[in-house]
Length: 233
Length: 304
Image (tube, rainbow over all chains, first blue to last red; front, side, top):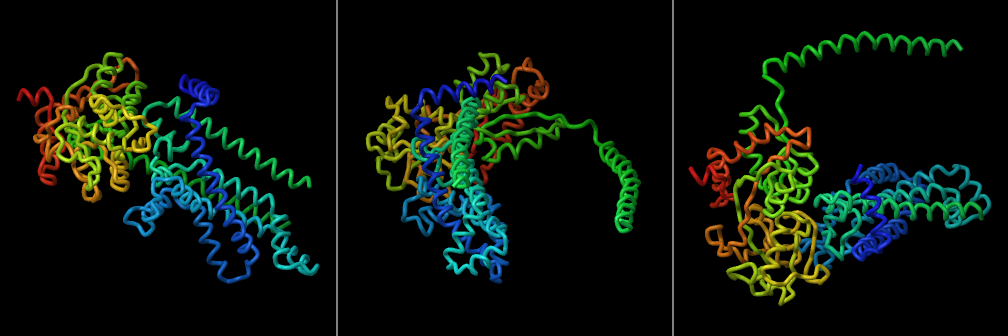
């Protein structure tokens, strides 16, 4: 019980004092999460919409289960692959990206991408199957059809973004592996929590957990507001 | 309507059909279980051992613990973590005995009343490893302090465990001895907050120097083609820096904390420090590396 109480007071103290080490960690967390989310959404939503609309294409029958499998990719395996590609001996070793923020963004994007594609795809498929016929009958182009479908599937798209955000910000195995948890450079909230736990600083670890949850809440709150604003239009 | 009634009857039948089956299964399993348990004596006692990753990762515990488990009809649950967390597990009473390597912390653990007494177990030593091209020119230096001063002077990349482990604690005292505590924010000093294996891998990839226990380096050397031994000599006997010695101690957790199996913890300490087990430690993996990973150092061993 004492540890719990200490954790909350610790979290508050760190936040109020704007602890520079904490700010650095939060900064790296936001850079990695934001970067990966942006990439995953930018690539994942068009692919998801395309696949969702193309459900009669025979290849989709094989691709879709593959994507659903990807939604359950073990992050640490993704991290391992990215690590091997970026390692000195790996094919992309010359980039010198290993143990940097870009490496973490790459790994997180790969983890989040199937989630965005899969959930977008499901949301698009849930749109009334008569919609394409109606819109086409009104003389819409393919792009207009895609846009109308997107608007109809909006709630599902937000769910895709929220799920991707949640998986990225809470991920620890892959970023530890490819980022190296370097203090002041690639340390993010989750890897800092692992570290403080291993050091036996349970209260500080829990405080970081509280801050992580708080950050996730603020982001989700903003997304939710955005989604509802769209509805009001 | 008639269909629904049929369906209902069908399910009702399924339910009643399942019932007796379940009843007959249960007793037989119980009988089988007791039949299995009866020949062996009492249920094994559980000893919770909190220790550092080096003792577990080196495979030493896997090699010696079965002997203890057989002799005392016990099961040892090993929690292998950093020394910091291992000590905290003892403080919280979540372990019966701790086996760690950070002398100052061990002494504080006992004086603060968390442990009953500290016993010498064994030692190995630390070495400084670094990239083959040796940008700081430390190869062959006699002491770690000299080498660290050169590394700081050249601002060559240095990877620190940064996790409050025994190795990290040792590294900090070595920097102090060098009279040069690096600013954790300087770009050449990388504080990783990870285990020894990860830190060595990092050093191998990024051409960094790092402090490691000899055992972990020896057992991973095959995967570390870019790293070379810089300071510490080819074996403990050739290590010229006494500050690099790394003693391990075992401490039973104070039984006043409650729910502590102190009796078994004390038996464990007696067993671990006995000449017979110390010999097992001395022999461990000598065949593979041509030198021991750990040198026995218990009182019984020294007085043998």
